[in-house]
Length: 84
Image (cartoon, rainbow, N blue to C red):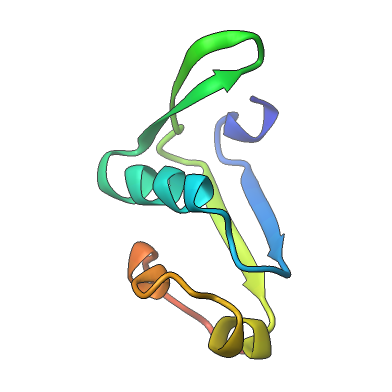
């Protein structure tokens, strides 16, 4: 995965409620810095460890965050949160 190279940031523009599979991947990344996906890229199970210098940054409009995100612990999956 190109975004997993040393020191790169993956910017995610979140405009809808994330699918439960994505929530699971984010939870796994926040706990162990790796994740597993079933049936990805013609593999039964795809496993990846995120480079320790890679950062995942979510951009979410405050209205979407407050009104459309249904996962009760979505904000707890992340470290620092900056409101702009």
